[in-house]
Image (tube, rainbow, N blue to C red):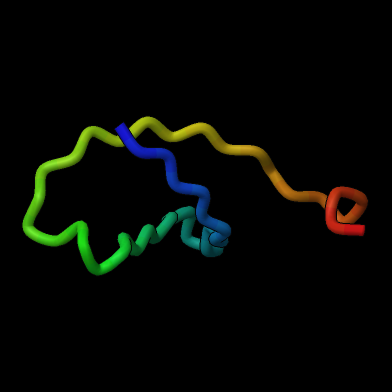
Length: 44
């Protein structure tokens, strides 16, 4: 099992697009999604 942290944005249409690193092609994966909304105060 590997852990990968990505920073991305959900579009206005509610779609989340994930792009995997190049070494993860043509492979079946089980994805566990844990999300934390990023607020302006968390960035500073």
